[in-house]
Length: 480
Image 1: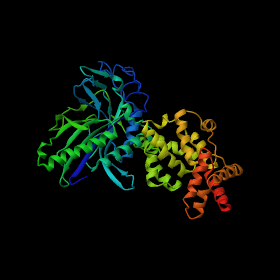
Image 2 (image 1 turned 120 degrees about the vertical axis):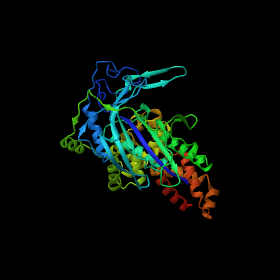
Image 3 (image 1 turned 60 degrees about the vertical axis):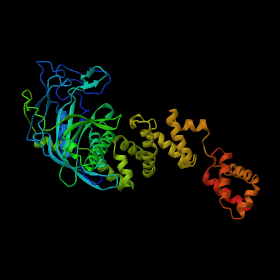
Image 4 (image 1 turned 60 degrees about the horizontal axis):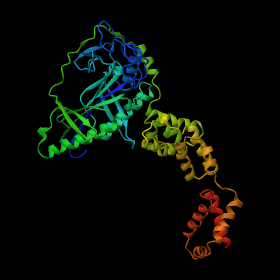
């Protein structure tokens, strides 16, 4: 954090992707690359159209509100937030009026770091609204896709209570995991389903400095880099007695230059002239419905993490890594169901599986090597058919060729030589060819043993069973 106190507030926007229709229209709520296909007259702001609230989107919003320990209003209602922009053809957005009368107000959530320590993030509010259309700005024109217009959007606003870039990203990752575990959203940044606004200030004490807002950061790595850049920029200005140049303004993150760029000043909060949406009646939120929603909250990431540590003996770091994304946790649990030893499954997933996914920027659902295929590889290694080194080679060959492990083992002749007589024959041949090395070994140069092992592996093209090979080699050396 350096010598200045860093204070961060986050506004996380996440599309509710797991409803059949949009939040106020009957248009299909699904991601597609084909523009302007999932639309209805309401999404386009045509006159004479009336919004109807999607009850499932409200239910998911209230579930998230419960998880965040928020209080809920007695009555649910929506407002019109008035502004002109091409991505909102009605010239207003149907939303709620934060910080009061949202689906969730005044909550908190405790976040666990990878080392097991915790910190609390205070929640100002979480509210449900409709997303805007997607605009793409080209060299001399702009194009617009209304598929996203009207998609249910949850905006989660924290209080300024986070004090490092690392903690900010840890919080965002956990909230994304909750969305996925609860079946609220895929929360896929590649599909534009998650966006963040970042508010940051620095000071020499516990007071708040001048707040700078960075809008629409589209990835968690972008949030992290934005924060590091702004902390450095503001700190350098403060060091040079030029902190008056840090203005309350809105900036944007530029991925190419790795800098934030000024967009506009923001002296006061915008006056959006909120007023109650007249076409949506107030809706009573009953205690019975809230209890039903509360009872339907599934096992959350930290609950799984605790189970992995207590039931399977995993370390804090291993369990933390496995529960970050529901796809990875599900993959791990399928491995357990296939009787793969938990520690071994965790090692292979946190090492080889995640390493491959990160390198090629893949999702686990795109991963060819299923838990069943991993089981095949590990069973062969367990039985001694292949060595641990060969198991790793086979892992990557399966991914490269998109073939079954058994097929590749036959094609490559990977099966280990474990037959005693076959191994003894090769070892005898190696020793017969290396009389001077045997003499050196007998005279105390014990590292020659590894040389003999290497020669055996060379003659068998790495297929000699290393455990049996070393046992027989030790026996044969005693006879010389």
